[in-house]
Length: 218
Image (cartoon, rainbow, N blue to C red; front, side, top):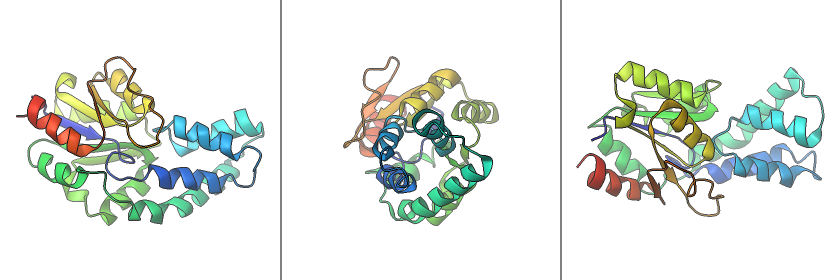
C-alpha cells in the first residue's frame, strides 16, 4: 500500500521539458560560442532550479560575475520565453487520467524546481488545482518540501512515492527517505536507470498507473 504520491511537474505532468530546453537556448543566444554547452548542462541536470543553472553558467562556463540585477533580468526573460509554451504543452501520456483517479484515493502533491508562484499559475491555467493537496516549487529545496509534506500528512516515508525524471529528483527522494519511480523517455538523457534504489522505470504515466494498480494500491 501507498498513502501519499508526490509528482515532479515538467516531464511528469506536462511534456514541457523541450519547451524549457529551447527557452534556455534562446536565453543564452547572446553567447553563441557557449550556448550548446549551456543547453547540454541543462539537459543533464533536469530538476535543478533555473537560478542554480544560471549561476553555474556564469561561474563555470562564461566565467563572469553574475549580479543580482542580471539574475533578475535573465529569470524574468526565461519566464517570458517559457510560460506560454508550458501552458500549451500536452499532458504526459496517462497523466490526466492518473491525476484524476489517484487524487480521489490518496493525497497528491507537486514538488518541482519551477518557481512556486509561476508553477501555481500553470496548475490553475491547466485546471489541475483541485486535484492537488499542495503545489511546491523553488526557491525551496525538493527534499525540504517532501519532508514538510510527510510531516503534514503524518505518512511513513516507506508508504510515500516521489515520481521524477531527473537525478535531482532521485536525490531528493533518497534524502527524504521516500520511494522513487523514475521516468525515462524520448531523447532526454537517461540519468536514472543505473541508480540504486530506483523502484521502477516508466515511459509515461500509463505505465505508472498500471504499476500502482498492480503492485501498490490494488
